[in-house]
Length: 256
Image (tube, rainbow, N blue to C red):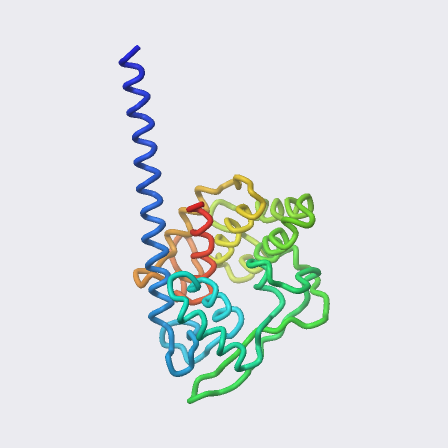
């Protein structure tokens, strides 16, 4: 009897140790991701460029997301970014705010435009704006069905679960093979993050959860940021602000 109890204690201790190690790894990855963002901060423009070396600065989604993700670790930078958004008169977009419950009218989805806001010292300030035109065929894209799921997670949980299941059906073992992936042949890293975020908002254990987490973690670059795309399990492209922010938000849900 004592031997069985000893075996049980060892098993529980092993699980607790593994969990602590995993949590420590996630914490370290989050710290590296936040450092990637803070190192990109341009003190002259009070914004982050799209990626290291870029001359393009996106107010939405990039800097809006960065302001949120740096709110705890670097509240000073978060405030400066928000102040700059206000300075340019761009304080909302209409879609990405769904992940923080700040979208004024999240659904139905509408088409969007990418527009220049200003040029400062040779740097282009841009943003995404949502129009009044209804977007057709949005349910063919994993990111949009997942955002719809998040948007309805409280007000219409049954509909939210249906949208989430649409994303599940797009999983092919490597990523979410939606209309965009079928066209480009590459998988988008940020859709992995949105999947974990949506599952957290629905308070469910997502199918393929471990596979999605493993794939997401594999896309973190040596510099701490997350690479935009991948193909055949290999990163494609550069680490950028938007992908890094959404990946960090997803990892934060794993630590709850």
